[in-house]
Image (cartoon, rainbow, N blue to C red):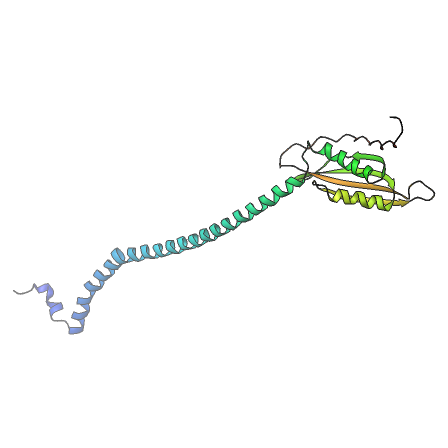
Length: 213
């Protein structure tokens, strides 16, 4: 079967031209296959790799967060134990009046002559309230040391915030002590401040033996 006359230029063309003419459809088919089939697959693979890398990064971050969370939980549990232990040493609102009496009795039992025992208005902090206590007394250095030793041995926290000692000549007592003690009350965040303390009565010294009451 003879080809139509229109194909004569191709049939009679040089060999290299025939090769070029034959390769053109293959190139077109290959380009079409690449842009229609391979290019979308390549784009999907690139997007998949990027998503995989992003997920891997997120996974590593979540693992680090999980490890930190476990550590934070351990630290929070330890802090909670320390807080509970500290709260046991801080007086509650109901325990502050008996604590005032205990401090006043400790001063008297140590041999100090108390002239002023006055709790002041609490100083509100973030997690606790600080209650200053003014104590003025006269006595000897030994009596003052015994009083401070009694204060240090109390089950509730009481600290010596400020102190001033003045020597007295030709007086019944060798010195005058002006002290500011402080106790602390646990205060949960958002709770109302404790009420202002009233003046604690000065204990009367014990009557000498054999005297009428």
